[in-house]
Length: 339
Image 1 (cartoon, rainbow, N blue to C red):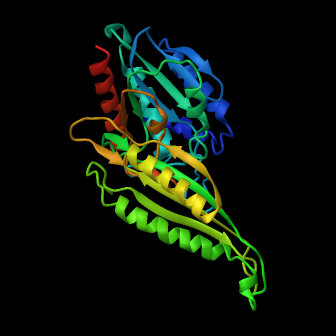
Image 2 (cartoon, rainbow, N blue to C red; image 1 turned 60 degrees about the vertical axis):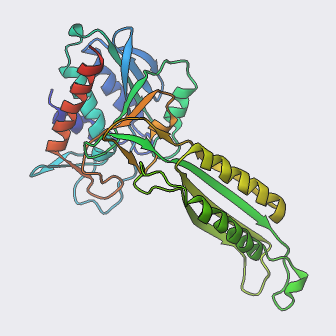
Image 3 (spheres, rainbow, N blue to C red; image 1 turned 180 degrees about the horizontal axis):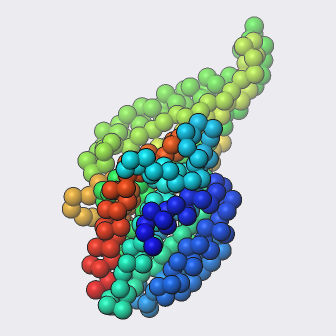
């Protein structure tokens, strides 16, 4: 079975918000059964393995984003134009899954000492529900893990962490003609942000050149507050995210916001807290985006997938050369680590 055929089949399943999750994991299961793989766990996730001792694992999420109305091609059909393959999820990340399955089919497992374990997850695009479910199980994770997200065939060995905050300020309403009678929640928020920005400006001076953007970043993504131009606002809510280069920065940010809470009397909760990671290695790069690699408790984590990297856009595509190359890369990794 050719890798293009496998990818063509995978694209047919509408897995936006895991709509046809069971159909796609049943398809994957049937392919793997032909090579002697056994099911270790199946829900909306699928975990299968071959041989007792697994020295490596591969992981891929089956869900996609929504296609939208601006597609030139049918998003649920594989369309080939010259050397490009178009289809929803072809890059992120059904191309990676197709390459995993093809590499497995091409491997002579009787010639190898060690086996592999394969993880196919759901809900990666929205809440990482699939990998969180796996982490709650007692399934052993191999010490070497490959995540098939798109990297244009480059091996990525790390990712920044993510801290997302929702912060709520409370004030007191009054007419704008007599603002002294009120407490302006937006002004309180502004004072807080000024102080937080000063803290951040010092934090970003500490760099790690292993990341393309070598410092922790901060983004004030959304501010909601006020009802009318002539009313002193009694509430203001802000959403802030930090992409952190190390765990020490993570701790310093949480402490700073906790300390400022006492001064400015706000409530906050952490929406996401995803730790950074680096797997030591030569000639590797790090990603600017969060993947399921950040959730895995494994010694060596690498991200390696197809290209070009163009997920979440209309007319998503990959090149045939990249897909074929990825199959060969996966086969080489399997043969090297399973001898």
